[in-house]
Image (cartoon, rainbow, N blue to C red):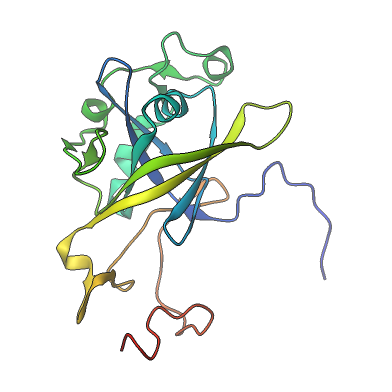
Length: 206
């Protein structure tokens, strides 16, 4: 039996992303988010235009999407309710946000150079996606929400995640992403079955 509900948000589960950007003075900014989805080499990021992250991406036209594993929940928690905006926007201050200039230091994370963008990568994250801004799409009116369309320019992964015999693919059995499921953190359990919906390896790639 189904019932009709009116949820506050449609948030069925996506990967947590640590977005690293450059502030106007060249210092790094770091922000966790999870409204992201990928299609080929394009990623859509759902954020508030009032955030420092969006302001940085609009100005610099680049970022790094760092994908944390489940072991980085403590670092993500330390970054929660921190913002790189100073002064803190009223809407965020009302929700308990505080200004913090050194987010890498607060979270105990290590910045490392990127190859094609100026924003740093996060050493502790096993996957880094260097990206450049393609377009900005307003989501709701009146609202500060925007969808940032970014193009993935370079992918870095920890070597142990490579699929045996296929060095340019991630082995899903080895990758343990942090998932935001209805605004709570989850990890992946075990593989349920093989999938024919969108197979990675076709006849020409075996």
